[in-house]
Length: 136
View 1 (tube, one colour):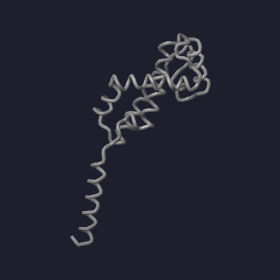
View 2 (spheres, rainbow, N blue to C red):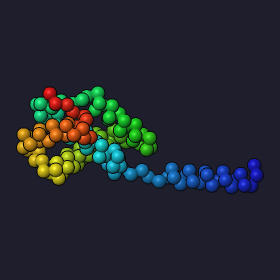
View 3 (cartoon, rainbow, N blue to C red):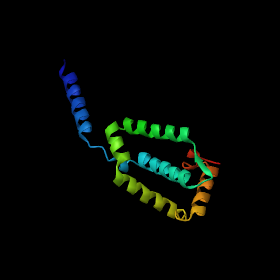
View 4 (tube, rainbow, N blue to C red):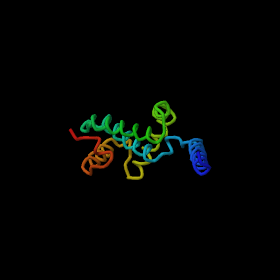
């Protein structure tokens, strides 16, 4: 191998090792995953608590699988994904984020009528939440 080729090979190896050593942020700090899961969590809560709203289960499951695939493509293992989604602390944090999200939009989660109206509006808009739901 020529000295130039050896230098290039060493530089590429060093670059690969340096980028491999960089720690990934926790999934909660990856907006494209965490924010999308927030929308799923709100949609799930709406379908559970509003009698006139159902889930589009196949769409929701497909969306969740897509998020898992995205997380894997970002270098997260199935174990890391399960630890994130199964964590009681993360679920609690996600509930708090959901409350904040709703409050920012003037929706009181404890007011069932207003909450369900919000869900119907999201369905009508075709929002990230609405596409996961359907009116009965």
